[in-house]
Image (cartoon, rainbow, N blue to C red; front, side):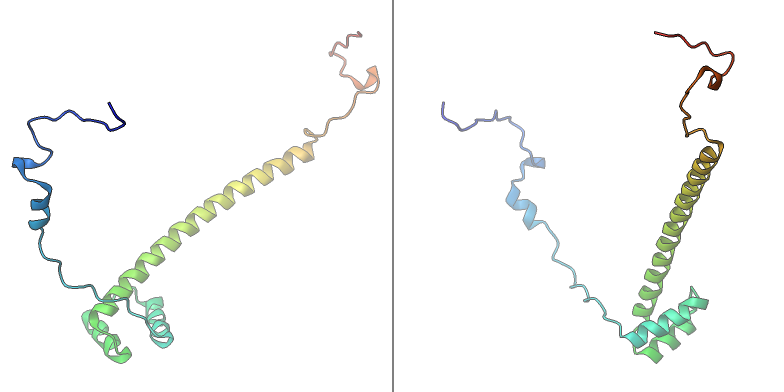
Amino acid sequence: MSGARHWPMSNKSCFHDGQNHLNLFNNRQQPKKKRKSRTAFTNHQIFELEKRFLYQKYLSPADRDEIASSLGLTNAQVITWFQNRRAKLKRDMEELKKDVESAKILSAHKSFLENVTDLGILKKKPIVSEDDCPKNLVVSEK
């Protein structure tokens, strides 16, 4: 036998109802409309959107219309920008929360190490004579 592998064949096909792989591609729906390309907001538009977002996280339809027309954007662009900005705020808040928790842990560790150092627990004093030993400690000589 050469280097080729022969796989056992079964009566059942890998495809349902005996369809071959070509029919699977023929059954696909035609592609939908092409997606709109990414909007490149100007610095002025971003500044105005961010300024509004500072005090208003959600817009009423009237507010949305007013912002869209004043900035030369569509309603959909304003809706999407605010949705994305709220999602970014949520991510930033979660990251900040993790950072605060990490800082608390580091602070606790630092405080613990400072206390241990202050108590002299980490500083080992060499035993020079029997007088330096506690009285109930037995020192054996070798």
